[in-house]
Length: 452
Image (tube, rainbow, N blue to C red; front, top):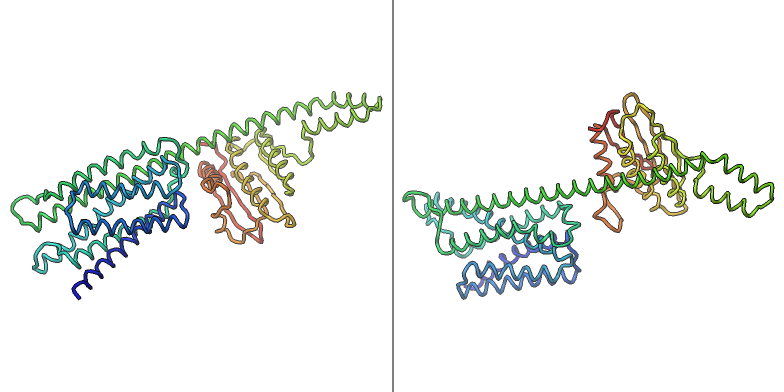
């Protein structure tokens, strides 16, 4: 009967520990790949390792630094061997997790310890956390709080972690390592009985409160530092990628503008081409005449449905997108009017039209061949604003479904829409999206002003 309470405490302790381990697994799976079998192995090895550690601690006294090194080393082996990702990325996530788990444990452990000590104090008991159920409940509360925080963090993906490559991830993990070393030194000092004194002869109760408060403050500041560090990395990465995509788009549209100019030169030489065709006609050289005409059509891209907005780069973009859409058997309708008084920058228009049309064509491609596929573009000036409306056929029923992707590179999903939103924000505009009877409607309203 004496063993029953001990067994119950251990079962409760390991259940809470496994909940925290499942939260860690969820976080890791957000950035690294792992099979179902390896996921079970990860959970099993974590549980076995924890049981072994508790068994050793119950029989022998192990220095804090040695215990911390063994615990983190065992966890590192599991992460590096079971999860699949680039080595630098795994190293970064590994040290991030080790630091997060350590500081969350210290923070919540200090908070709950202070609360228990306060309860003892007001009840007139001995100001010491008792071994047994009291210590077990404290550890369980800490594990549950830690798991809850990791679960919440798992729901917010960091963009820069998706495309880590090379040695940079391991270098960027240096702040975590420094904080861990400081934490280990403080932990070793605390294990030797070195506490933050309250000042004066206030007794062990206040000494413990001050010690836990100091540990709580250090862990809180460390977590805030890590949080700001990650937010900074994420913003820098997004800004760099946005600039790369912007200038890549500009280069592409400039290249298309060059092709469009070449087509225009061919049209201006139409008189000379007609003279050449007349000569071939008189000589009845039908084969040469046919090849000549085919070459003109191929190089000039003559079509009655081409857009003529007055913006060469945009004309080239619309010409390119129309050809691509027609190759996919997508009906193309375009009525784009951009008067001279429109102050929206030409490259911003190209990025806006390009991303919207890419999404529209992609939605049409996903439809079955027998279903109607179409893209309808219309733009004009409305009072002092530029209005763009694009309609395309879609297989979606609800606008909420647009947040999901079936792309082969899901980490790239949403970047096109983010570029659209950036342009809208730059011109103090409005963006509206809706689905009406399997027709996706996107409307953009921009203030007629120069880009800031």
